[in-house]
Image (cartoon, rainbow, N blue to C red; front, top):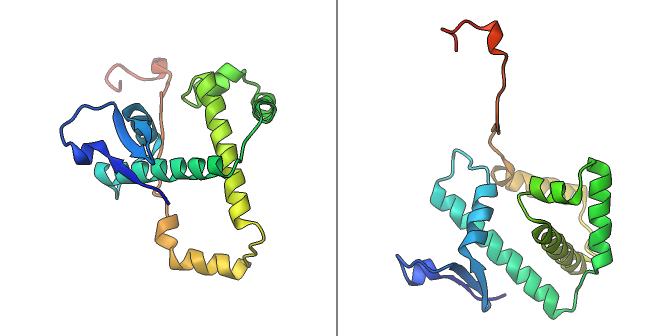
Length: 171
């Protein structure tokens, strides 16, 4: 459990580069904007609701990282190298291309992999020895089915078509 607050809430109209502070750790506006843009806005959510989800997820992620750090959970460079090597091998891309496809620079990608591994290790320690039956999973799903619903969407970057097969009036 930690403390988080938004500078925008404390100082409306401010142009601070810091969007949030989580237990004294600053979160930049750029990180919040970047996380916001990665969400596919469901038609049932407003921009403010999406921003709330983004801010909550950043706060929770930072709190988990801080907790893991306080417990001495770490990841080696070799583990990160192995994950990147596996991804490069599986995808046929270079490390730079993998980073670019993820919307990051190589150093950002490595930091993201490190942080994700650390959070995963923390979560594994928290749930170690916890057995959950399929019936419990099904019951949780049924009680919270709306939370698991994802609206259909299509993401299109470019659409190409052969204009030689169409008259000028159709184009």
